[in-house]
Image 1: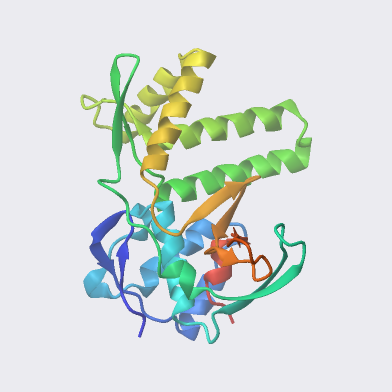
Image 2: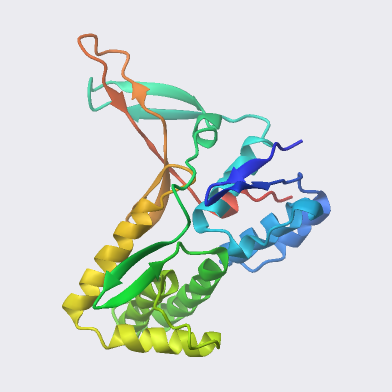
Length: 265
């Protein structure tokens, strides 16, 4: 039995998962390589108990990350991982055996709602975290730009231009202007993009800075950090056993890829 957990972006919502069957694992294997967000949505939707179903495409990225890790913690035969590292405090090598449950049991719930408001250039902006559906959309864009890179090279103007457009889309997906008079989703997106494309470079930099600040306010889920385009989970502090005069600690980074937590055959 996998114990339920509260959705970090909405602590009032409980998520109930079952363990995957062999049949499920075969279907997960049927998703094309590189479509990690797509298979994550399939995995989380398939394994939810029907009476408590909540579309994982609407969960935040951090919700989905926690769910994958939670599933692993409660289905793996062994959750203890060796984490050897060279200590910067004493200069010695420590062989740390960490029970990964320590990462999953201390996840953070969001403070307030999963949206924030601020004023920008006389308009109200609403910021919301990326959802699973957003991640799937970005995934397809990145796969497309990777193809451009393979054909024309990653130093080509075509590749760099498409990469810049994807970075713009990442910003557009999390921010919303007050476009209540526009009901069609395609028209809303076009109007939003038109507004942003008309900004000066300095205005856009200021907008991005405020958006990132609001996203930081909404941190939730597993404690993690982005570095050089990759996501890492942060371990609890490990106390150096060789420093006697004062307690000093080290926190390690564990690379995280969602596909690693989806069962296969």
